[in-house]
Length: 222
Image (cartoon, rainbow, N blue to C red; front, side, top):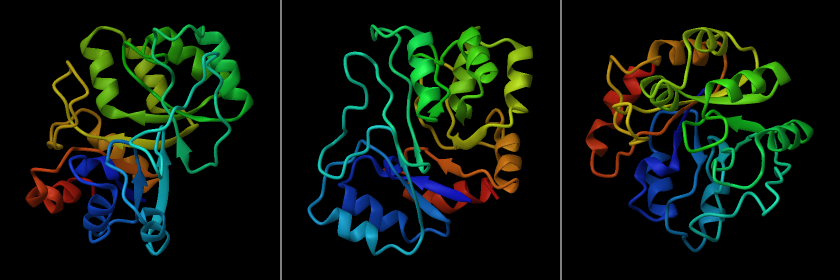
């Protein structure tokens, strides 16, 4: 199933972005933080006849919600939610966070240096523990460009059976810039394969000033 993230139109209110995305030929929309809250947004979403997923610090009433408390406790969320691990500067140790994520069976997004789950050894520990993963191919690209992802770990990840969501956008390997996709976007073909296997695929490129490219971008994912 192909989803588009609300944050694709990050420069708009929640209602404006959702109404525009609801017209696209996709299976559903992932509700994400980063859009200005809108009165009546919950009612607008509930009238939508497509599928819904939810991501990290999304809030109905606020720009974003707090996910972790001072102890780094992982929230218990419905299956349609995926979350980021805490930033690496958070005082929680990786092993403590991982234990909590496993306890509530959280779907956790692979990150990049600066976050937990952003380094090779942590990714190996997460897979060895059976953590449910959301794989963002642009985050993988940053890890590899920075030298934080070994080929053996990458190959193991691409065959990992507990990948339950895939996020796609493009970047140059230096920052998570959410650029439009290109044919040469790393692991784009793998993402298409995962979608054909039934794993939800979420398009995350920022399109607020490139809306004319939406249909050609979605064609790249078919």
